[in-house]
Image 1 (cartoon, rainbow over the protein chains, first blue to last red):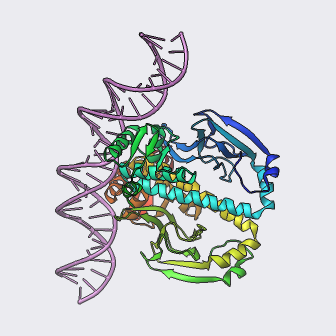
Image 2: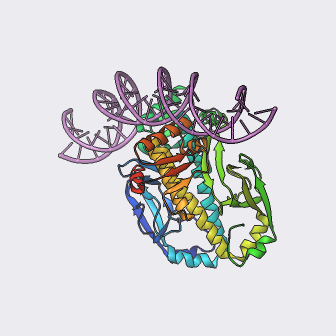
Amino acid sequence: MCSAIDTGRIDALDRIVTHVQFRPGQTVFDEGDLAPYVYNISRGHVRLFKLLQDGRRQITGFLNPGDFLGLAARKTYAYSAEAISDADLCRFKVTELEELLTEMPPVRERLYEMANDELAAAQEQMLCLGRKTAKERVASFLIGQLRHAADCGAGDAAFDLAMSRSDIADYLGLTIETVSRTFTALREEGLIGLPTTHRVSIPDVAALEFATEG
Amino acid sequence: MCSAIDTGRIDALDRIVTHVQFRPGQTVFDEGDLAPYVYNISRGHVRLFKLLQDGRRQITGFLNPGDFLGLAARKTYAYSAEAISDADLCRFKVTELEELLTEMPPVRERLYEMANDELAAAQEQMLCLGRKTAKERVASFLIGQLRHAADCGAGDAAFDLAMSRSDIADYLGLTIETVSRTFTALREEGLIGLPTTHRVSIPDVAALEFATEG
DNA sequence: AGTTGGCGTTGAGCGAGGTCAACGCGGCAA
DNA sequence: TTGCCGCGTTGACCTCGCTCAACGCCAACT
């Protein structure tokens, strides 16, 4: 549990950590809340999102086990976070974490790298939202999910989606209906298989990659 | 020139800096290039963007004097950068900058904050691209430009746009025509004034802010 | 077994924004 | 002065993705 920041420091972390659990749909924190905590996901999935007044939602990212949450280093959270599935999170007080951090500059460096990875992902997503068609967006999303599954050691080109069609729609800047129709279209073209609604197989990764353009 | 990283260290920086100049439209670096340099803008404006194979472009941000460029901390640049106007940049070798950085942990901390600011801006832009209408996007963009102009000490609610309609379109995920039409519509509604094509006045900031939604 | 409610799919019609084309304007070179 | 050429604007038309609505499926109750 509490998948590593750094080896050999687990004991120090253990002293300041609290374990918290969330049910599907439960709020971890809301945009604008004071941000006294940082979380690490030990089990389950989390969605990050921003809302407009009238309820329109943009999901800015999905978090997986091992990912950090709330590292934004400001007084308040810049987005809301909700559990997608049952989730176990390790919670740290930022103030206490800061103390550890000043002792260990390389950790700060690691944090900086993580922020930059997130930034690169955000820019890729901006390209998706601003300039890709519905089909290209869905294909890009599926390739992204596939890569993540591959990193987690899933050998063949098939994986489960942790999120609903509604979440995918709000992540890709589309409607539920368009996402559903696009899944169907990709299946009919033979680019993907859908054994169940939440499982995707990709017979020819290169072919699907081609459908993502750029 | 070379608007500050930190006071009292200017001398150390002076020894490793090179001044480089760019003409409008000139490339600073391309996505995928090896990234040996970091830049700081002392004069002029720069656009950052990503391209798809077929030429579709998404501008991920505009940089102003004082901003850093290429801090992404990886072997290659994640996006392309071009000068919008005549621009003077201060160029540093990352390797040499790293040496200074390890001596001064607080600078790394500052860099981390800057990365997080960029990340927050990117997430705001994702909301814009994924969920806002053309009018809301243009209004959001203009409010953003106004805030920046205000930070630079421009007192009244009017400012100059450093970028073309084409750049604005590629930043907002729209076409040139839609941007142009939306400017006209905002003008006809009295939400903005357009003394020249590249100057914008905002008689009632709150009214324009209302048009950005969220 | 029947009911309910959440989720995903499908269809029909519509509209915001894209495409294509024409035109105006200002700067610049000859 | 003339003739570009790049940029911005405007109009007419079209299309991709949205809206609205119906329906099917499955799991959880009663």
